[in-house]
Image (cartoon, rainbow, N blue to C red):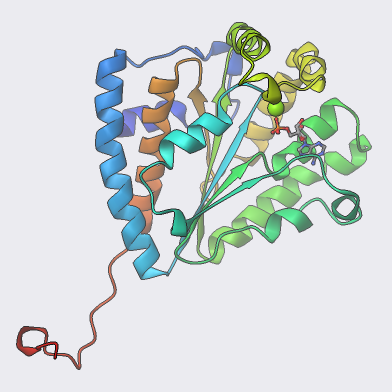
Length: 271
Ligand code: AMP
Ligand code: MG
């Protein structure tokens, strides 16, 4: 499958129809093939990031949203592994602090939007304010319903100012989440990831899917498109995410700056 066909399939345009999407989709690749494709994509990403960093005329924001154990952390580890860490900022957004709660919901987000030359990755984001907040009724309905508009406008503003935005929903199945939770319980080195609240969120699975479907439909725009990436198989997921990022970096088309015209590069000797 070509990159374009893949991206068209993953891209959200209207109702994301989450029920019809296969969380275990592999797009015809086996594991070895996918790992080889991923390695090729990483080479391209490394070069594009170098150019982005040198050019400093635009930035990339990658928003990652998902249920627990969908693989947000391992996505960041895998996909960012080859990149220059000096040019990547990863920001996790957890339960807001008291100070953050005292401000509008975008206040803590805006401060972490990337500056020119940088890639920012949000591990959760302002979308929690129309997801967990909606599902658990942490704010009144008339407050969170207005947030879709606020989010669209905020993201359009960032785009207009030079930030390219891609938003990725890691679509894990409920069965795979169970498997990964069980692994977290069994393996001492993974227990720290398990929180009591995780089971509460799992019990509200259908409500979350409804909230996700609504958020994706209302906020997938040309300036900030959503992609639904099947997340049950990490190796297929990695190819999808690398291709999405590559595509958006290619749209930025960053270039190395012109060298200093006062220097005659062929005729210079370093004393
Ligand atoms: P994790 O990403 O698994 O470390 O967990 C972070 C937790 O913070 C999740 O349970 C989120 O639902 C929660 N969280 C993130 N943003 C918000 C928010 N704006 N309001 C309430 N809870 C949030
Ligand atoms: Mg968690």
